[in-house]
Amino acid sequence: MSGFDPQTMGVTVCPLSLNQSSILRPFYASVGDKLFVMVYPLLEVLGSLPPPDSNKEPWSWTLIKTELPFLSDDVTGSALHPDGRTLFVSVKGSKPDRNADTYDQPQQGTFSFDTEEQLEFRYHGEWMLPFKGQARYDGELDAWVGLCREGTGYVCSCDVPSLETNCETEEPDCKVSKDKVFDHRSMRHRGATLVYMGGSRYCLVQCCAHKDDERLAYPRHRVIKMCTFGLKYDKNGELRIAGHQGRASMAYKVARVRVCPTLDPTAFWLLLL
Image (tube, rainbow, N blue to C red):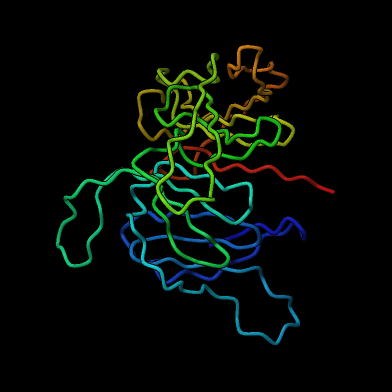
């Protein structure tokens, strides 16, 4: 498992987690300088890489004594609270039971996890975050922003729930952009990722099949398309695309045929100071 260090601009090898042999797809979440991985029933955390001359124990994962209340395969979306420590996760699937051979009890809802002090999950209700994958907090919009869960090619925003009450919280208000950022009905579309660049500016990274491989589910010839745009609320409070300002594309061929659980591109934004 490889990791990128933005301070040294180098790639390092991370230790393997305890659940590396699980057949379930892991759910990863980065919170500050910690990386969390969730695969039922285990929850592990990896801290920052110790300095080379450190006399501490070897860099390794730490098992948190909190059992997951959901299956990692069932995670539909996630977002980090503006407090920088509370992770929200929405799931839709089956409720896990360690004493049962099969999971046939349906489960849908949103949980939060305090990554610093309590280290436990809290259930907020049957409502779902509207996002597909990870959403980011936009301070200028005062909302989470991400791609719509239904994969319709729209961007959506969601108010941040309060953490003050210990009971279930009401479903936060959500808004869907009036303009599409990609065509999900295209035969060439395979996946998309939204990257937040700060200042309500975003970059959409889309994976498409090359025109010669558009009928293949996992094409070897692919095209990465990128475009940047801004978001704002208009005078009626509707979420609007502020204008596309940059576009780029790159064609490539994967080294070998591989069936991946998702073709959503892996992308992140680096702010170099």
